[in-house]
Length: 388
Ligand SMILES: *Cc1c(COP(=O)(O)O)cnc(C)c1O
Image (cartoon, rainbow, N blue to C red; front, top):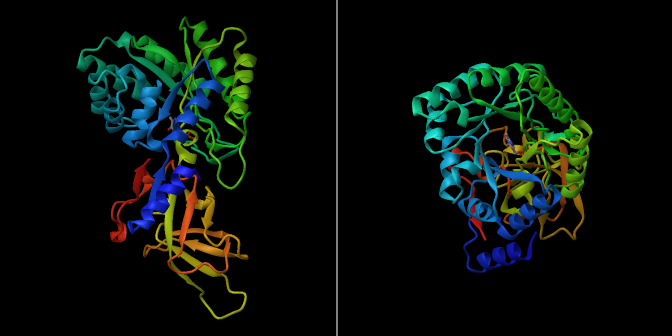
């Protein structure tokens, strides 16, 4: 937790304005993270993955610092533009887009698009014709599958195609007159293994060679996101990722290094945010001595902690009683849905003295929380965010 967040929460409590869970995000940390990415991968352009946290303050800061933006929808494109990014600094990175959204993006000036199959490429071709944009001005990169091994939040098989198929998708784009621009992949979010990029870069280099044989000169490799933030376990620093990626790039591309971009989301904002929540109830299901406690908070899976699904992301929870003895408990949210349990399979140790009304701090919650909160499920408002 940063001093700024601690002071802010204290002042808020002193004013009696501490009702409801809140996520407080410290922009200084985002600034440090951006600088660290820019230093660790100096020849790589940073496209912040807007979906991780689209707060206007975050987007404005990153736009000012020179960041580009990876977007998933027209709404995110508009947010990036409103924050001061020009259209040539925006990519439409979702491989699943309505044709009319592609047309809208083109009208807004966006020229960089992800695809993972021929029919999506055709949508871009048709949308460009409709809007009156030269096909040759539109850059298309093909996403390839990545198994996500080593990641706590793998992105599985939903996005990307087999590398061999990417060659024909890019050839298809080229034949259509679009610019076959490059290859992208995502090694899985919260990727703990700095070497995870190696396999995908081998595939990317193969695709570059195969395309070259067909007279298509690819230029760019989009290295995606996956850079972790610190939860309970320590994670390697961003420099280690930069070094490992640079080694893998040189290994597979030799001295003809492609243009590269990264799309950090979690790694850019995760550690900048902290949620303050409250204990609503501590209870047991029977009188047995060994019965485990249930601790219910006023935030759960529907209030912004969706990434506790399958207990994938284990947040650090701090209390004001951390000096006291701790014992394992089941940690749950407040809604009337039995899915709304954060940690049950692996019990979470919390102080035995923890009581109703105590505040708890959930660290590393700057990414994938505010936008993962249900709208008024059970009448609970979506997670509030305050950017300081
Ligand atoms: C979600 C996403 C990212 C961000 O991933 P992180 O693991 O949060 O860094 C980057 N690129 C694409 C295409 C994504 O969908």
